[in-house]
Image 1 (spheres, rainbow, N blue to C red):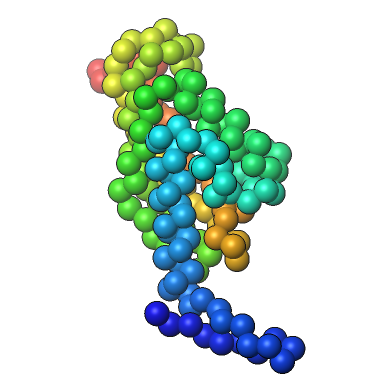
Image 2: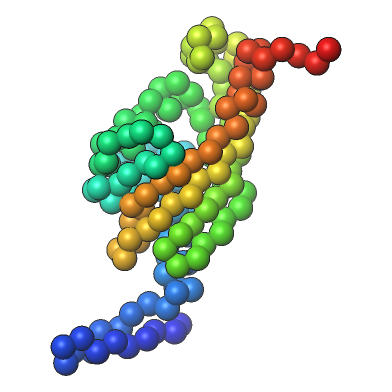
Length: 157
């Protein structure tokens, strides 16, 4: 384990190396996803900073907004599961590519439940603070894949 030492006003304070920071942030990212899958929103949201900001859509700052988004997702898709297939971590950034599966048991996009198993891919990018908490999030989901599986898109001709 590599630790740098920084002198601050006469005191010696150990600091984490960039690779250790990246590994800690990747671990926190994966732990947040695991808590989401267990529907443990308290644990999941604890990985987000109090002033967390979603950057991929207009949204107010704060943990309560990410909690509401996660709760709404669980309500719409009660058996949703996220499998993180790839992660890239560098300093205070973690990017993941995940596959999400859920059964269509509730009205989604105005479509009555079909009981079909729906699968889609999404990417998310998170910036972490010095404490290892997520402060900013960008998401990109393949919504067209969901719409196609729900029958909302025209089929091949």
